[in-house]
Length: 227
View 1 (cartoon, rainbow, N blue to C red):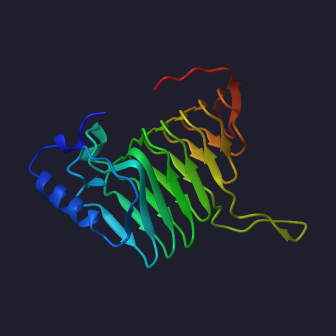
View 2: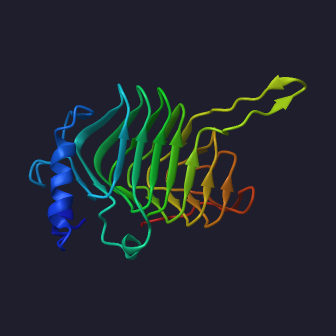
View 3: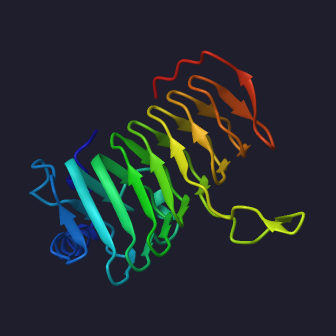
C-alpha cells in the first residue's frame, strides 16, 4: 500500500496536526503501532468528527495504523465528513493497516465493539454500527455505500415474545462486499466470500460463495477472489 503520508496538498499540515492530537488522546491505546509513519498510529482528515465518550477506547495492535478519511480515492472530494461516534465504554480495535474512507460513519453504542483485522479498506460513505459486536477480518474490501449493523433499532414480536434486536456480525478474511450492500444482524460471512452490489444479507454466507439479491441468495460457489 502507498504511504498515506504522501497525501500532500494544502490541507496536509492540518491533517498531520489532527493526527498528532489523536495520537496523544487518552482514548487511544497503542499496544502495537507501525513504525513506518512517523511513529503515529493514524493519519486523520482534519475535518473528521470524533465523538469519543467516557470510557471509550480505540486500540491498535499488530503494528496497527489507521488512515481515516484521507485516502486518495475519487470519493474524497465529495463523500462528506468522516465520523467516529463511540458511546460510553465502547471499543474500536485495529489490527494492522486499515483504511476507512471519506464520509463513513463508525458508530458503537454503549459497551459495543467493532474490530478490523487489517490489510483491507472501506471505500467511502460506509456505515458500520455495533451495539454488541461487529468483527471484520483481514484483507477485506468494502465498497462504497455499504451498511453493516448488528442491531435492528426497532422491536419485533412473535406470539407476544420479543425477537432479538441485536446479534453479532462476523465477517471472515478476504471478503469482498460490493457497493450499497447491507449486512444485517446475526450474519456470519465465511472467508473469501463475495457479496454482490445492492445485496441485503440476512443469513450466513459460506466460505467462497457469492451471494446476490434481496434477500441475498447463493448464486455461485467456490469463487476465488484476489482483490
